[in-house]
Length: 503
Image (cartoon, rainbow, N blue to C red; front, side, top):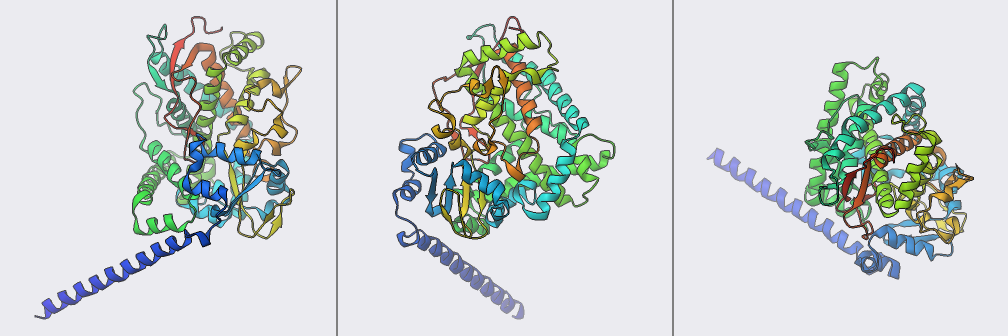
């Protein structure tokens, strides 16, 4: 009898707990519902267009709608009130955020919360001492001649030993003989192999002819997409409730991050087991200073985000543009024939000014990271007169900035590498805040020069050996949600080997 009474009381307690829990959930949902009522957000046409997705009737991509709004704004700054977001394509504002008042525009706690589950305390998700420490350590290592030489060795091995043999296996003598290949997927595999070997000293072999699927690769893609979608919601309560209840997209994200953590921990374990005191890879050098495995995990994820996604995105956009502009393809190969001849080792690649211009021009139109956000610490006024309240998200939109007539002239929509040349010599835009593809100021990309070397080496190696044709050349790119620009549906191409690799 006593046992039965205890069982009954336990059941009652469980039922009461479920009832209270359900009431809490309902109240939370009601809070979300209240926040979405008109009196809690702006009824302006911009916010209504965003909330109802009306922009999609005219524009393929959200970034194109933002660009349209920014182009038509007198100050090149707009407000998306339901997101609490001030968006700008004004170079003076960008300089103010990234340099003049850098301390007043950190990544901020709201941003860290959105990406915290994926990026943890990695360099892209922190401010203050943690950021400064990682920047200093990474900067010291990446500037070493030995590290840059090692990076070049890794990239060349992946190109000659894997990427080119893989493309040859899909190439035919003519269009009818060629097999359709998703070039974006190939570039993602290539950059994943490269960053893992360079950063961790480990080889996932994603570019073997059998094209194995990496669980880490798949989980990272989905986690990136779902994390980016958090930032697009009108209120964080929605995704926070789903995370609390472990349902929907948050359940998927949790599963992905679990897989990522397991594999990142395995990378660290293997690196530690192998020993790291004399190794060239970046993780080994960090492990000589850091013993915290959780912190090392966050650094591993940051390396992957920096070295895999951005490089793959830049290569995908570049080859989409080159396939649509065969005259630029021909000019790159002509320059290479003239300057370095048949040298396949590409030791003189820095002398190829037109190639460098083509890469910069490609990223002007299609930056791998289309926008970047900071959060205002204290009330402020931007140089264009925009009032920014404390806690406001402030975003500079690199994609839109590449489409501003005021910056690039009336031919801003043209893919024109010549705009980066003077008397045949490449020159950078003197104001880095007009072209913040690699960020600018204190947070400028530390791996910029190595990324450019990788992009140019891959581009020239493939262009000299293959003709790459788009399956649907007239379709403009559509982008999937993510932390970096990703072509929705990939980049289907046909590959043909050139009869003379040097022409």
